[in-house]
Length: 95
Picture 1 (tube, helix red, strand yellow):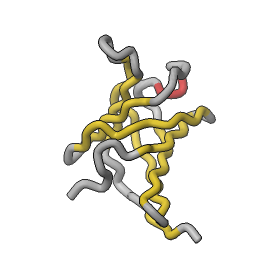
Picture 2 (cartoon, one colour; picture 1 turned 60 degrees about the vertical axis):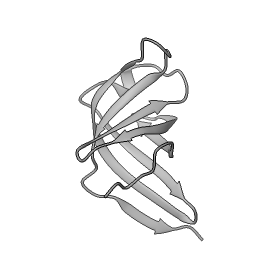
Picture 3 (tube, helix red, strand yellow; picture 1 turned 45 degrees about the vertical axis):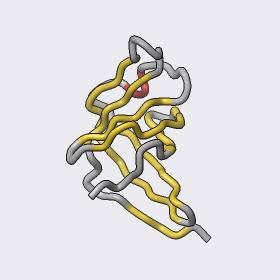
C-alpha cells in the first residue's frame, strides 16, 4: 500500500540544504522525486541521507531515507532523486 500520492509535495533536507520536491513514482522499495529548484549537487550526492516531510491535511508525516541516485534529467533539466523506501514513517497531527 503506497504511503504517498503522486504529485505530493515533499520537503527534503540534506546536510543543511532544504528543497521542495514532487513525488513522481513510488514502488515497493524506492521513491522517485523531482526537485523543484536548482541546487548544488554536493548535499544530495549518492550515498547520503535525507530527512523528509510531507503534509496531508492536518497531519505531518516525516521520514528519513538513504539516497540511491541523484542526477539531472536530460530533457527537462530538473534534478531527479531516487531514495530507498523509508523503514519508519512517523505521522503526527498538527494542532
